[in-house]
Image (cartoon, rainbow, N blue to C red; front, side, top):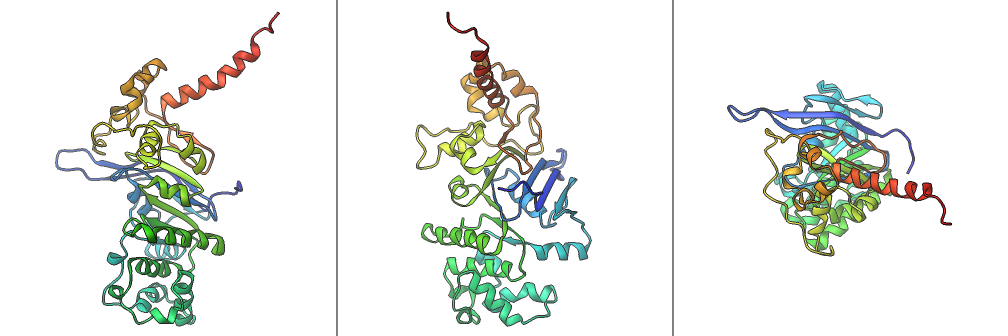
Length: 344
């Protein structure tokens, strides 16, 4: 992986929504840094309600941040109608439910051509639609022009949605649970399609998912999100084979192929309008509950000290007092051995 500047950068992003009457605002995204390089696929994973979709929608300007900055190709995202229209030509959204994304009264041709018409495309519309459908794996494309969504399989509908994004020749796809509504037999085909598009077109992608297995199969890097913050991020093989944050460990433990006993997290995620002090995961943390954090000398920090924002496009990072204490101990042990006097 190159060290070039990210194609997309998120810096200190906060997004709050008005709370219920008498309640403070809900901090849906509460300080996030994130970077996506050109040609890179990043998976954003976490439980429902952790802020993944809000963050993803903000990258297209569909949700305006309360604070922080989004930069694309070196230019901060602006929110005028003209600037957003130009931005959304380069950054396209692929939604979870193709049935809800496609107008049942529009043919496949019209569904794919819609973006071209919105953006005033002046070239050969028919050729552009055909090329996008072919790239999405619907061949021969002319066979699908006059078909309606109800005449297609779920996998074909998702390919039409992807073709609608590709027709504008974007540089970044934001795919929100792109295979969640599909049968298991079709999911692999769509994931293979996204990987092929990255190879053929140099596309970057942010894939939003709750499925760590999907992240393993498609992503270069993974960012684990909990209650509005990224708590662990790094190369996918590092994070998913040697997770450091207890939350990541818990998510991985429930996969069918995971060894050992699944970790059952206590309770539900806290209300984003009442985020606890200290580590926001501490009330559900299995490491704190088991006494491991106390033995590491960090239990008070877990309950009382917040941690730095994580993200960017760098190496593995973790926002966890216990994980950082363990890493410090492991780093100190070789030094201690080296400094010991040689045996007589």
